[in-house]
Image: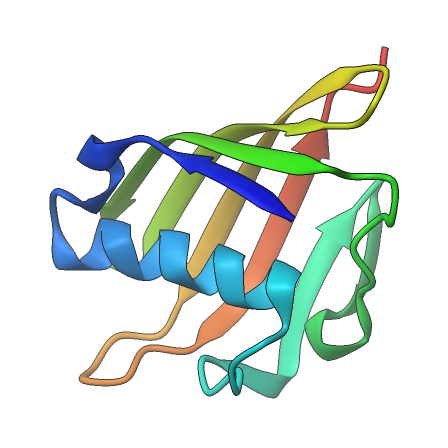
Length: 113
């Protein structure tokens, strides 16, 4: 998977944390210590456990354009690129607070029009 992440997405520790979480979730190369067995993702209106969610295989590249956080919520704006299209997406996070925050939920909105 190719990544394009704008530098200003890491301008605060929590913003960088969101971007790092996304990279880890997609690449699945590191241990996902930020996910619990109760963490959920809402995709196409359906809620499922985040640990069981599979990233669509046709994605070749992911661009992270913006990431913002405030308190226990955060959002990421980006686009997924396949060989034939670009799909804008937004991810809305709710996470716990503390020294080692964990994802409670992620809502994914993808423009597939």
